[in-house]
Amino acid sequence: MTIQPLSALIAVRAVDLHDANERARIDAFVHAHPEGTPFHLTAWSRAVAQGCGQTSHGLVAERADGSLAGVLPLTEIHSILFGKALVSNGFAVGGGILAETDAAVPALANAAWAMAQRLGCPTLELRGGALPAGDWQVDRDTYLGFARSLADNDAAELLAIPRKQRAEVRKALDADLGISVGCHRSDIKAHYAAYAESVRNLGTPVFPAALFRAVLQYFGESADILTVRHEGRVVASVLSLYFNGTVYPYWGGGSPAARGLRANDRMYFALMAHARARGCTRFDFGRSKAGTGPAAFKKNWGFEGVPLLYAKRAVSESAVREINPTNPRYAKKVELWKTLPLWVANRVGPHISKGLG
Image (cartoon, rainbow, N blue to C red; front, side, top):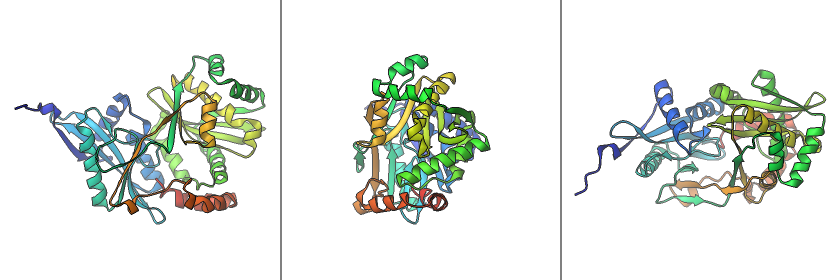
């Protein structure tokens, strides 16, 4: 008979995210794990709960000796329009099960499903991370992730960009554009104006301004805003996260003038230099849907798309939550949203988007 070592036995429990000691323990695990992301950090969970009025949960898998074997951050999403779901992690492109041992994966997955049923959430979503076996729908085709190493300096960075896009960046560098970086009220206001207009033009409701303020609050020095101005006017801005030597330009957008001014090109190239000065060695351009313009834009910068694996489990096939805006059933709504006056979109949008998760 084979006797399993005590240190290999796994127990899963929910954690209190208000407990500073629990938060420190989880965050240390995330920072030490090679597949950890900022979306696994308790700062993210607390920020989305505060900024969007949803409820954050956390599960940890522990060995018999008390050491952590895995973590799973979860956001309980409530929406009149889109229903309820338990998501890892809410308002993030990543998350999912972060484990050191194979045994922790099914243990955390089963505990999360039990939590979803207890909370009355018909769908459980895992965005990346270790995928559990069993009754899960796995999506390998919808999203691509784009990341690569940063070059050693600006000159090398230019050479790392494919020739056609490099020419656009050079034109952006020659343009009369100003760059500022900060986290003050004026920076937040400038970013929200640029981002809100950008997503309205894409037919997407904007997130609450409180979400951006909360992310900056909880991430502290690990987040900032870079803004591009032309003749004093804000034309593009991006809120970025910094984690384990990687910069994540997470929420970025620009005014209609940004394209002609090549402000987005200037913004991302400036961010690369800024991130390098902060000690970063990697640039994570985030996710885009396969076959879309944003995916092509990132590829033009020399980023190769890698499929992102997402998993869902639901009480029935008809109960699976569907919030992908490229779904044909949303097409008319997307086109209508693009026509809304900006002040209307900015007033109504946050009430819708905080239920998307």
